[in-house]
Image (cartoon, rainbow, N blue to C red; front, side):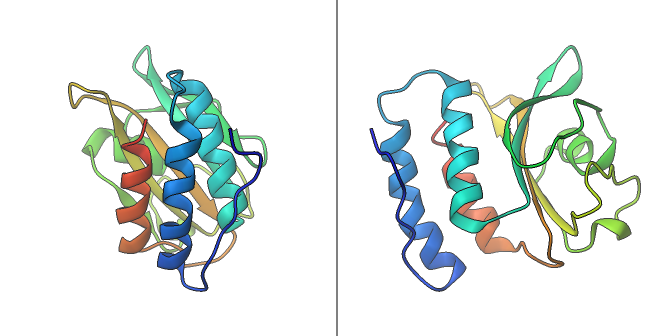
Amino acid sequence: MAESLEIIGNSKEEKYQSLLPQIKSLLGGESDMIANMANICAALKYGFNYLWVGFYLIKENQLVLGPFQGPIACTRINMGKGVCGTAWKNNETIIVDDVDQFPGHIACSSLSKSEIVLPIYNTQNEIIGVLDIDSECYQSFDNIDKLYLNQIIELL
């Protein structure tokens, strides 16, 4: 098992290309989804220095806080509420350049300026939760993030 990660590259894409095989190796041989989510959070937080990286899992028709790295977070989110609840309801990735411009944004931290939320699916292609990442900078996320983060969550 790896004890540390080595992020190589200057561009965002190079960093993801460096990180992806390391995450794959880290998760290899571990079948527990919660443990793997925890390591994904740590790898992304360490690799990109995001404000907050975490998972919300669907339980009793709500998104419930799962493994995360960063400041304390909202514990439960209803379908259609905030960026996470909207991504769940619409079953789509949402990229928000300025969270203050997103109708109904749930401000767990006033430091958050931009956000990306991606649905997570089980083997039957049913949505089981979301990966949520917040940045202290505006316009931090784009289609490069969407592409590589989808590849990372597919490892679950």
